Image (cartoon, rainbow, N blue to C red; front, side):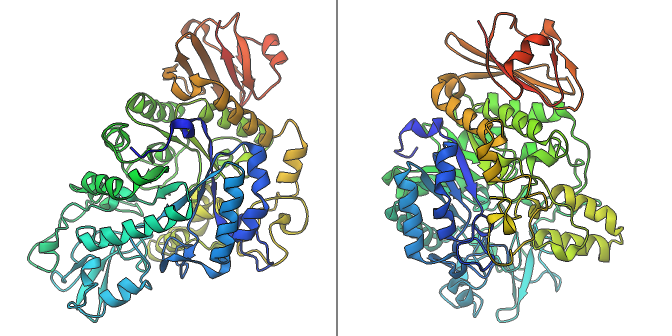
Length: 573
């Protein structure tokens, strides 16, 4: 592993989506000086790590995840001097900054690709993945994440290039050692500036099965098609192209070439990863990264095999089975990342809680459940306020490329009713997480003096940071208490996890144990009172309250019953 000391395991991370966090110059777009101006908010919360979504120069086809220049700052976010000031402000407050390392693909406007697409003989051509047409068309039926083929034809060379995301995000060819060295050099550039590590975007896709350099230009070397997914918006090509045969070789090379030379933290986004693969990646002795982001629990409210937009109600045992599998699977061998939401996911309180009358209580319950587990919790901006999804009925209000492409395919190609498609967008669309941060009840929620790049959630007069920080019983202060507990209670960092009541459809209960310290966590994922099945729980009749989302005096009045969306944590005697 990297040389970083283990103190980071006691820390809680916070994701900043810079475009939507804080605008300092009135252009309606969040920026680096805006982030710097809000660092006291993070310090008050107790944050020790910040994951910053991309701020590099980009044409913004996918909001910065299409990078044109890895060593420059996007103009609308500010300058390198602004970045240095922000970094210094974080370091002053003891906060480590994780940059978003996006190296599965670049922008098609990156100089490498502009050169690569000009001619097969160009020195940069082999920086990307190409294939001749097969039977006069795309080499495979692989579908990209944002709908449509994963292959785009390049007139100048008569080939198709691979892009598992937008056609403006061509995939890099990691088989080429020059590509790998380019990546390692840009990592050195940022680490030498003092950043604290990297969140690595779709990192387990860099080694692609089937795609050997020697076969890329041979049309007779057929690549396998993906199985069809009926009524789905994403074919399962991603499973075919993750955790390829050279992935761990590349990661260990990166570790040796870069990570071992710095005191840094690493987290690898790993679509389709299994527990066994995550163990291999994060093993403290033989792995390469400190933790991974996995998505298994993000699929529990989608219909199996039909993609994220095919909604189904949450069946709590499915969620418990998934989370507990990762808790027990990585205990003692690797390390979990913990999250309910991020820039690609809907707001947790709308998805798994109650965005209405019980918004505050259910937001606290969700926070309690997650933060009592083993791993590094990641808070997405606004989660600490209980921010909610939006519900716009005009597709033009949405800016996200995935959402717009899905709508066009579903409505115009498949003929699905507008309102049915919008219901899926209201539940799962990425712009739910990207509405501007709600700082106050003032003009534009205190986010900007100008016109916000994306519309605000209209509940900002009630849900905002100024109100939350002034209210001792707010979601914000509950998160602050949870963060403080992680630093004070070693059992939360090192203790084992045991799931209780695995089949209960409303209660999520588990224990954490380390030496002679035991915690019992009980969370009600429903809007109804739930009687506790005491014979299946440890005896907590003499236990002490640690934290909950209702006053502990009420626990004593109803020791055998949890109220709607209630959470309790006991220290067992």
